[in-house]
Figure 1 (spheres, rainbow, N blue to C red):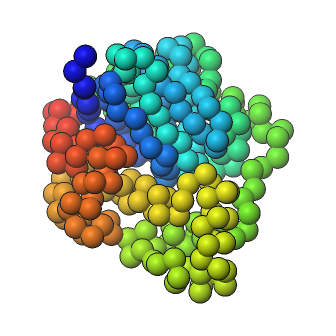
Figure 2 (cartoon, rainbow, N blue to C red):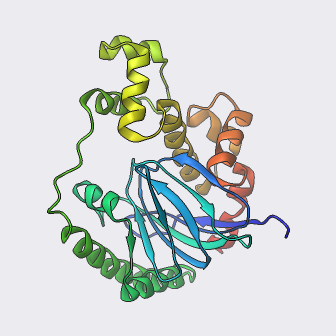
Length: 268
């Protein structure tokens, strides 16, 4: 079977929605990465196997998967035919950070009503002029998600080791400028090797992978606003367009140029 990587991506004029992403992949597998936004995922055909916080999960057809921000995950098709998925990336407008812990514990929600409502949001987003319907339906989705997660919040808040948290804050503040490991070690008064071990142990991802994930997230936003890949590379801290392309394709599955062209179709 031929390899397929068909995508459509856009940023709608809906408060709280960072990006809409539809994809049909056959053989493509996502490496470990993070997002700044919440990832609300439904799979329409096939299934995805993924690891989140070092635990394996799957996406049966009737499941809604909610992956929290800043927590590493990957993804790969379960069958030779791959998968078709629809994703909403949401900011804290709908889901505050204090729900990250419960989402890490149980990211896959078997809720037919929620699954139907998420599909209805995507249907409304596909039709320009239906923004009010999309926003209204998304409000109901957010309310149901919060109900699920707060029912689980009896488990205490997830805490990261102090040094790893300090390094993540430093990386977040220097996404575009970047920093060397030696510089981070001087600023945080820690040995470079200890820094890498502490971060990787806490988050399941190396510091450089985390930084590249953040940069790719920013690149996606710029490309959907019409920036060229060359402009985007400069604005997001990549060395050049080739550097951006290598990491972007690794994390998104297509090149920045093809991703930008997909805006089309969505913006019609």
